[in-house]
Length: 296
Image (cartoon, rainbow, N blue to C red; front, side, top):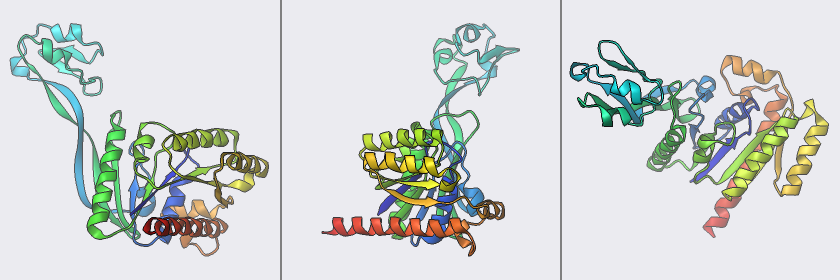
């Protein structure tokens, strides 16, 4: 089984559009959307839910109103200002950090800590294969833990169904969900764009893949909007020993396909689709070469 993750140092580089195209081109694969804070792969692939599960992580405090004496001890000691007093103490679920101090010091033992329901995760079917994705509720934390959970679910599903490829849409940036999504992957394909911020964020991602010793390849999206910067990015990649696997031109038909909810590679007239097909061919050849090396 091979795992390939698509990353970008910033949002808006076209990462999800490209993995949506890969979903159309690849055979025998499972798709995973690890951008659990703001997932959008499902908008392109129109999944049909098969399973829905609650994701629970951490704890939040809850008041047993019938046991509360109104002493206001909890109000005074809460460092987050999450507790107010009316007839009984009331705890804001958005303000509560689950530290447990209020429950520990409540003289009436009227406050309990309960496991926090902070999101949901799904197994769905699409026209292009199974999709495992998730969504954290607004303001919730533990995105890295949720990413690890859905990746484990995808691996179990792949093993049980004989699927040998997992394609992962990673979160933008270099934070906790990105680090969690990098676990056990065989290749990171980094999507960048020809801007100064794109180049800067590409280097941050490559520093991260270097740190975890994960092979990385680069794709420059909309390269023709700034050819000079694209050349500069290619030079940077060459100096770092990282191959630029593809360059995709700017193409308005990509936007049209997004509006209609279909991968751009389903279009016969798109220049971007042609470049993405070439990119996928090179990526597929690399994966096959790695499989041959491991088999020997």
